[in-house]
Amino acid sequence: MEWLDQIKWDAQGLVPVIAQEATTGDVLMFAWMTREALALTAREGRAVYYSRSRQRLWFKGEESGHVQQVHELRLDCDRDVVLLKVTQTGHEPGIACHTGRHSCFFQVLKDGQWQAVDPVLKDPESIYK
Image (cartoon, rainbow, N blue to C red; front, side, top):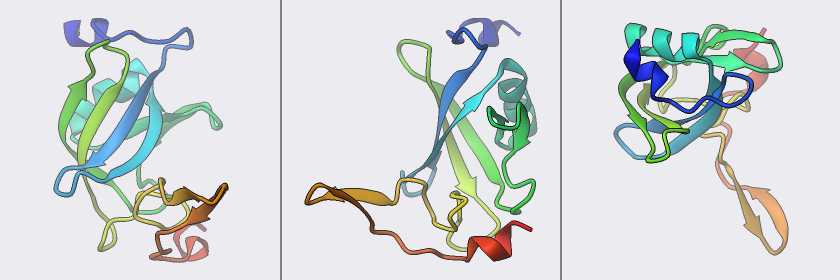
């Protein structure tokens, strides 16, 4: 697939990916994709990432049910970062973070300390078994 050849993959064959909520513009999470993961994402219309800790493909929501439906794939000007415009499903509002929050970017630097400013929408213990 020629479009995959145009991406600048790192030495491990990965590209960084940002998932952004299509309706609100909220940045939900950051992850990595291999060539196979990106091809599957484009074909299936569902986010498939590469888990570096598990060393395998990770279908977003495979355990939690919090699937990311992909509406659009974008590539940055340097061709080394992918942006997914998604709808986060499985809970209302959507939960993208393994902490049970809407977004993985829930901490804000205030007075020299990181503080959680977004609520836990669902207890992670009830999400992951």
